[in-house]
Length: 205
Image (cartoon, rainbow, N blue to C red; front, side):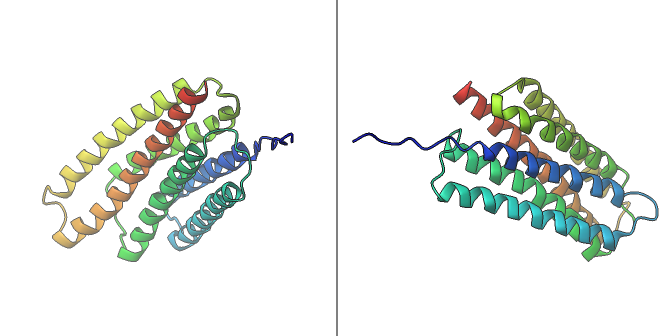
């Protein structure tokens, strides 16, 4: 009896691209949050909408995998990439939420530097996802993301040093530390996305 092969399901690439584009929107909301006169409540609501959209995209990928479609790449790699993209969104949304919950009116200028790194990482990731379909010219992507993550680490350490310099009271230090750690987690998660992309290229290139 001849077996019928299932057609390859390439829709995963579009779903990854959608998830990455959602991260660009979220990163730009972070930038907007730092502008003078920003409507923080409205931005927080928009960020929550992004987070919900990210969750929906992740769940859609998982449901498709569970239905037994024929993915174009290793199932574990698809799961890992979807999870990594979701982790970025979760950390960015958490940072915005904490700023509102803690009532932080004055933020260290270094946080702007963190956010600029995240915005660039989001743009690079969104540009890379469509190229994943053909494993096309992705080496520069993960190298640049790694460089951005190193830059984010340096910014994070400088922010920590400033927090503990005596400029802020102890309670404010704890609140700000939570925020900058979530932003640092987002930078780390972007690197995890890039590492997973590199793994996919190595396996399938």
